[in-house]
Length: 221
Image 1 (cartoon, helix red, strand yellow):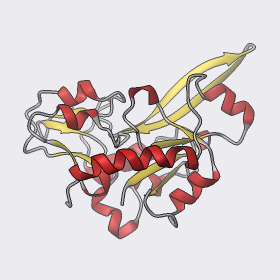
Image 2 (image 1 turned 90 degrees about the vertical axis):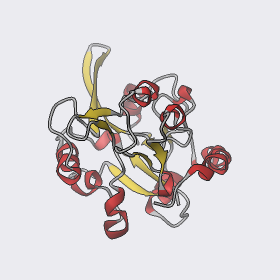
Image 3 (image 1 turned 30 degrees about the vertical axis):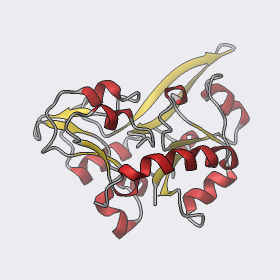
């Protein structure tokens, strides 16, 4: 199994329900700079017409995760299902993982005196099959699932829609799939010209190659 999430970001209304649900579910320390998930906001204009784009974001649980590679104590590691986690008991707060992460997805939890981040709510996967942020989203932005299950709703969605990644040039092979909006005008205003648009067929060979190399590092718990 290999857990991932697709984001139909055009549906995001920036209601913050996902952020609140994440904090409540995971006991995340309060504070504006203490976020496991967040909504990125980009404003601009096209021919004088203003627009606002919302990009839900969090740890990308990258297949080629640089945060895991730089950690000197193995506190940052791959867990079951390819989920990137931090063992607070091994974390020495060197902050190397924070510097290595291209997505600014990590922060220091002062109550644990360790780095914290999204865990894809791995403690509730077997019971509910979804993360707290997906369960609470009123506009169904998020779809969590197993990339290795051809019959999962996630894979069916990725086979039906084109998608792109944030900061793909970092070559981390992130597992947050941003779905190309079906509204062509919205797609043009919200997708960078440098972004590569993928289909499941173009992505799968790359995924299989990297997973074969990295999955040897995955722990069973």
